[in-house]
Amino acid sequence: MPHIIIEHSEDLPVLPQVLVDKVHQATYASGLFELATIKTRAIAYQHYELGDGKDGFIHICAYIMAGRTREQKQQLSSQLLECLSTYCRRSDCLSVDVRDLDPEIYMKC
Image 1 (cartoon, rainbow, N blue to C red):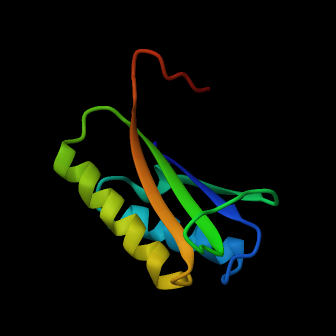
Image 2: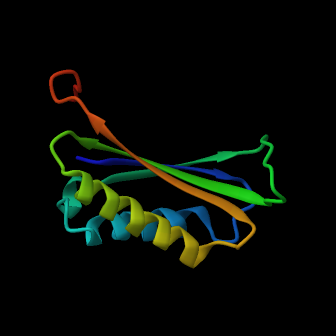
C-alpha cells in the first residue's frame, strides 16, 4: 500500500532508476509491507534553491495507511534516510517524511 515519492534535484550522483530501486528495496526491508504493495516513484526538479552550501537534494515522502506505531514509522524513516545517505553526496540535503493516510478518505480502484 505505501506510496513512496522521491523528490530530487536533477543532478543526482546516482541514476534516478537506481535510486528508485534502492529505496523500494529499503521500504520492503523495513518488514512493514509486502513487496507487491509498495509503489515507488521519483520526480526530478530543475529549478530549486538550497541553503547551507548544499549542492542537491532528495526528499522522500512515504504515505502509509494509518495504524502503524510511532516506533515503526521512525524505523521506516531511519531506514530510508540511511539508504539515501549510502548513495548520495555529503553535500546533498536529505530528508524523509512518513505520513498517515486516513483509510476512511483514501480511495483507489
